[in-house]
Length: 67
Image: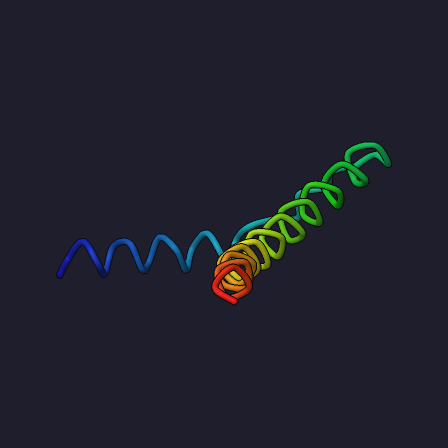
């Protein structure tokens, strides 16, 4: 219980007495970060589409083959 109190007080101290961290993100790093995030999002959606489409395609082939 004492550790939780100490950790909470440390967190409050860090939040209240922190200063601004100034940093520069150049255009190359900014575009790279945006491309990475978009790549992860697009990859996730392609994964979902592939996970749904491939079994559906196999089912259609199986049904057409029986006729």
